[in-house]
Image (tube, helix red, strand yellow):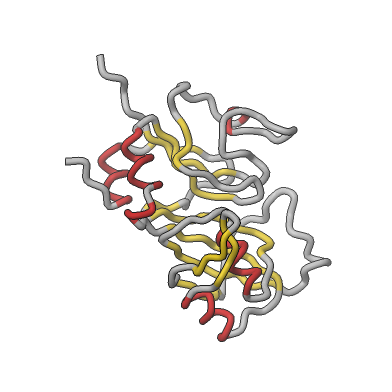
Length: 199
């Protein structure tokens, strides 16, 4: 009998690993969810990043989304230190040089814009507002995913990232999930949102 294919989306909270096991004193996804042992995250979010993570036992999804040649878009909301100027935003849109895997790397052009109103609850623990009184929220959409790329990009233009959430993969949205929430999704709905077709 063929194993049942399962698909879930979660809102990975801050300071939770993108793996089911705990490690180095940090909690894994297994501390939040009890799922079949063959269900794994597709890709990852850093320990200090939050947001949309897809869990499945369908290896085809994993292969399609993680293969760089497919160029699936990922949208992040990023709270950075200070006030982002037009020329800095333009640099992010055009591409900036960062270090990735020990090599210098020019990022692909991205969609980057300042967000004037972000309605999202504070994380736990919250950003230190006394230390960072002036911040800017931006939306950055990428079609590549080097290690800690968004953080390296914002730092490159002089605005360290204070908070980072992945809010979408293609048309698959994080909302209305809250931190720690999990929702099962059908294969049909998922493939449609991700613009995938397995024939």
